[in-house]
Length: 147
Ligand SMILES: CC(C)(COP(=O)(O)OP(=O)(O)OC[C@H]1O[C@@H](n2cnc3c(N)ncnc32)[C@H](O)[C@@H]1OP(=O)(O)O)[C@@H](O)C(=O)NCCC(=O)NCCS
Image 1 (cartoon, rainbow, N blue to C red):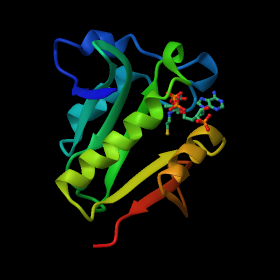
Image 2 (cartoon, rainbow, N blue to C red):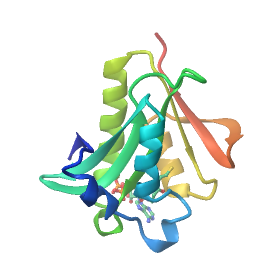
Image 3 (spheres, protein in one colour):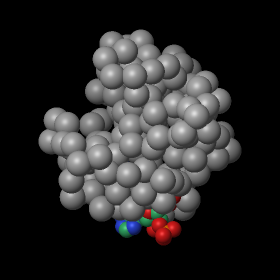
Image 4 (tube, protein in one colour):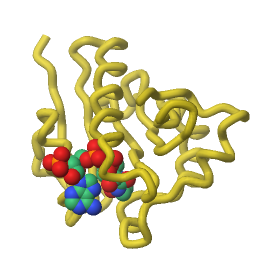
């Protein structure tokens, strides 16, 4: 697995990826995420790759989000055809590594629809803890590295 930036060359491949129908309430379509990426200069969109094939997508901050100082992992998905093969876990580990390489004591923040128990478990595996906050109806988790 590796992450590669979304560019004009792989944008269409990214737009074609989608989760299973029952998961559509968990994540916005990638078309929406790419529009959001253009509006949020702190974040950058990446394809999650298996060899030369894009299997998923992530949008995350590469500098602290100006309003709150957190590095947000804003969108994260693996296409339904490629789920449960380890790409999500590998990609999340790589995203955290990339953010820490920008700022070693980065405060990383992520949120999910409350009943998305699969990602709740996955995020906690990496040390994320629920803050108790609900933002835009979503459960918020933080991963804070002590400096
Ligand atoms: C969450 C998501 C990215 C995980 O991707 P993935 O590539 O399937 O994840 P992995 O294969 O690395 O699996 C990670 C763990 O989740 C579990 N898992 C994944 N999908 C699951 C499912 N549908 N039901 C139960 N467990 C599931 C895996 O079994 C694995 O746990 P294990 O090793 O203890 O068995 C993917 O399910 C997805 O895109 N979901 C829809 C969008 C979404 O919810 N995004 C998060 C928005 S906050």
